[in-house]
Amino acid sequence: MDQINLSESEWRKKLTPEQYHVLREAGTERAFAGALNDNKVDGVYRCAACGNELFDSADKFESGSGWPSFTQPIEEGRVSDHSDDSHGMRRTETRCARCDSHLGHVFPDGPPPTGLRYCMNSIALDFRARKGG
Image 1 (cartoon, rainbow, N blue to C red):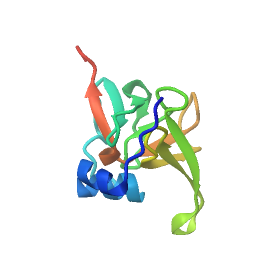
Image 2: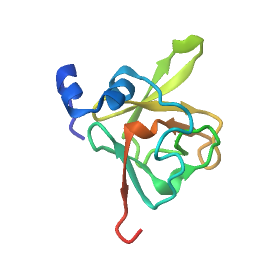
Image 3: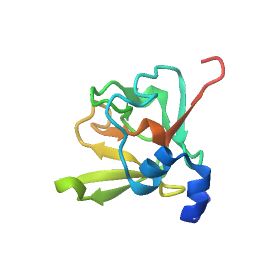
Image 4: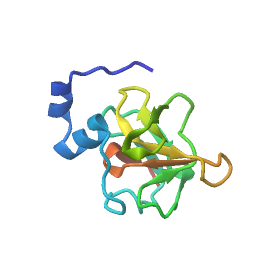
């Protein structure tokens, strides 16, 4: 997968101010405010910054957290995990492996088969429905 490296001014031109805040400044949208939290359509969730395919709707589940949650990425190497000690807690940040944009966090309290909960910001994702789905 080819890496995408844009300058911050290029990212500002490409993204809305809200997207820039979440994707490039590691911000967070309010719980239950995102458009994709309740999405149940069959398809693929992509990085809103670069289009990298990240998560499949088959791996989405209702976590009750207020953010779209997934048990696993669509394929190994699509996301990268990083230690995040901000806000007085230790968490694991999830970023797009292609453009290094912040997506959300992963927690070890998800359902089988992985036991993981990839808790993503809706604004960081671009959903594409499958044809016929």
